[in-house]
Image (cartoon, rainbow, N blue to C red; front, side, top):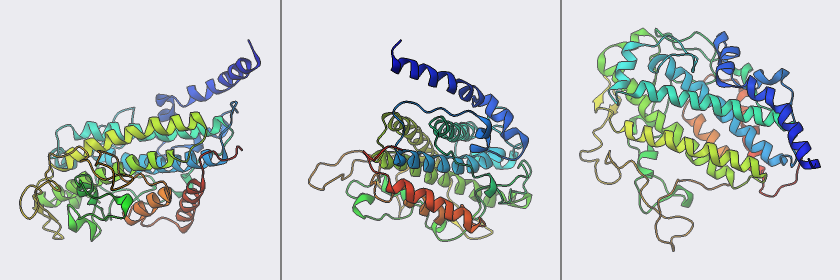
Length: 378
């Protein structure tokens, strides 16, 4: 066995306990099931770290750290959706379910509870893996536990634990709907797009019942479920763009492999939610006037709103001189991380969070955006 093989074997032996400790069942049993909603670096405090040959650059670590933070945030919001509208089992920590909300979500698709569960499970594993990988390289993982201070829904089925994210006062940008249907515009060119549900972008609306009072009247509860359906698409289209945008800044081969391997799963999520949002029934919420239009009827309809056009329409890319091509958009790398933070903040996810939390997210985003492909090692 040569020197490199010996080093690799030593690294592998030191990382084995980490892999075992962070197995999905062990992870859930030792962290999330205790009722604190803990995900991430808190797990890793007593786990031995290992430095592999060919260490990460500072920029690579900064990118993975920002992505770990983003996945912790996603896991937190998806856990809340799963507690009320998904499947509760030992794979995903949760409450006890809310039958009325689950039924309203099922109007968009009868398998919504399973899809919510699986999306939640995926984000938990993303966060755990990224933090474990950072630790294995001797890099600082991300721990957001001190910021789990936002209140839970008071509706039947929700755990009463601190949260990172707010799902009860959302301002949902639904322009992703029309952006992915345009054949001549691209946000990377500075283009803007109309909202599919204009009202969602103009107020603050719950995507989960705030309490059992939100379970009636029926159209109010359905409006909450519809809001969730469009919010699912908003969240996952963001991840779909974030990974390829930041991949352009990664240097280390293994780190690039991680980013390129996780990113497509976000696109799979987005494709699912893009399809289901189109099934949201048209209605007006009798409690606040929020209107969900029939996207297949005038003044909507056509390519920009037709609900069965869920695959990305070809559009301009790199230069208007090139023929149009079906792509993820945006994928501009400059300012990608800060753009993600700004979008989540505008969404209302962090209403009630501390200034320290926002400062930390901004610092993580700035560090990721300053990473450069080919940057110096640590």
